[in-house]
Length: 247
Image 1: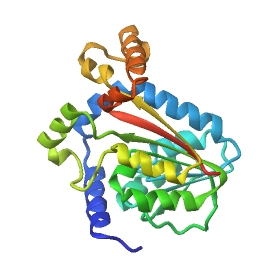
Image 2: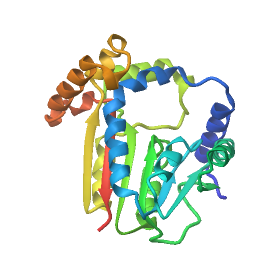
Image 3: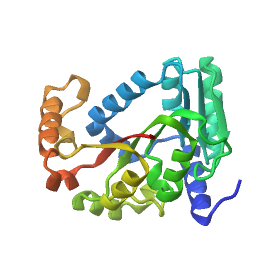
């Protein structure tokens, strides 16, 4: 497995992260993206049955196991972190779920071209060379194959200040998405949709507990979607859902 210096740093960072018993402090904020996760899993549920699927940067396999229950014909999880893959393998064994896991560099995977019907990932592309990884995903997808990714945005100045103040919470090479990244992706995919999430839901996250049961959260999420209809306000979002189709 050929690794660049950035690949090596990412591997070391995530091996160290997954070797810890406690999670990241930033996990407390992710409830603000509940509606993003709902849309993400809804897409996977509608597009997984009888498909050959790749979890691109699968980590410890939490999402992989959920998708495996949607009856794909085959599902593979690939990640650069051997610590993460070992955890994923053990978890799948305990749950008696059939998943093929591989320690791989997602920028250059050992699969034949046009292998997968669906490729998805959660917060992986911003850790990689986007042009290299996006071209690799495109290579691996069958004609009319689909991709869906959740990624952070790097355009909200307040969120960027927080990132600068907490450098140890993330890898030094990660690069949240900016507008030029979306322009590049549009050159690769015949169909590409970008959905925006997490402004007011993040700003007011201390004021609700379980978003799925909170009327206040639902109100904030609905206002967010109205805000994001305006292109000049989309920079305020925390994260995006990227949905593409290879034609």
